[in-house]
Length: 478
Image 1 (cartoon, rainbow, N blue to C red):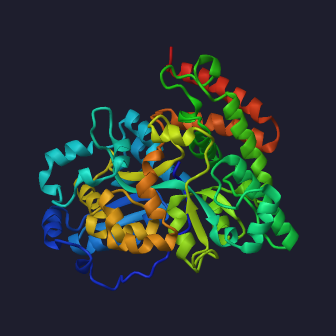
Image 2: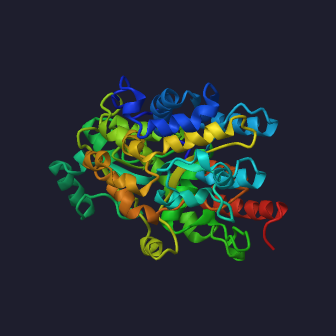
Image 3: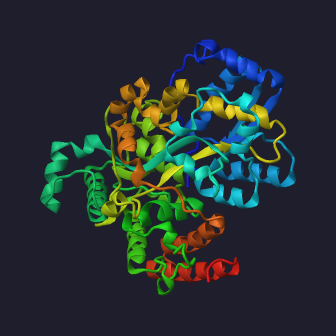
């Protein structure tokens, strides 16, 4: 779930002293369209991620300078973001005019009719449509924010894939390469499968001990928190061939006896692997969410990890926050079990998580039209390259060809090229309106497995049975 990497920002020195008009094409159109709303203040809330910070620090200021519409954009923790947005909508307070909606939670919002239908808004207010705003230019990620009729309820503002990051400098060290091959019999390289990943994790953890340095072979988001369940649901299980959280979406069952896969031998093996790998992670790994996992990679004390792609740029380039800059960070596809990659290429599965979110307009908003202008302003093409460089995010296909991204790509070990070429092998969360309920059930059982209170097999059996019962209680299935 995206969620996610909160406090870390890829800091780039921006020429904010320049006038907004130097950064905005066709400012006269924006002025004219915004004239009826000049002097209005629109308010938004999002998680404190690199892309959201870029919106707050750059786009919001430019928008106000051009249009006269003031933007108060609150960036806060993931948990508080949802609490504030949902409470506002349910109370009808109208505090927020636009809100961040993660891909995986959109189905809950749609079921509850919490968001404005942007397709209808655009049809009813054609004068508010910017000529360069091109829905067809958006990547396939935009489809996650449409209802069954194809109407749009959120304009994507960030998207990225959860990838395999590794210490390229360590992997290329001749002494390390020789020692690794002597022990395992193969040339050290980014792991292609989970056996290789485990051997790499074991090796670097022992290497750190032998050399008397703080170095570990793995990191994870293993805190008692929704992030723990997300790591299994979005990252580990899919790469092992357990898709859609192990739930058969035709009959809404999770147990193998009823067509699900959550208590299958493969699902149990994957969870057991996940728990076992924690011994190769830093001592505090059971307090890590997505924030601390990315920070561990940036600290230089972790040799490899599966990290949300929005962190790739700042970890690779921000010398004030990261110790693995200057070409030390490597980027690769995540490891997968045999057959998973072929299934993904054939469109029958996926290898990992396509993460991100959109800005939507809540039904309780007081300044809907002004908010619609701002949502378009954030994703305008002339700023897309710079925006992508600030947060490793891409939501429009044309952004991949932006000169800024082509220049930046080699500095982040080809992350953008990987995203462009292989993004279709990743997938967002399945269409679960009951998403939070299922995540909580899985989290509770996975926490027990991580704590050693139950085995991985017992956890999978328990959560599969509980999910079957809960889905039946909610009216799903036969």
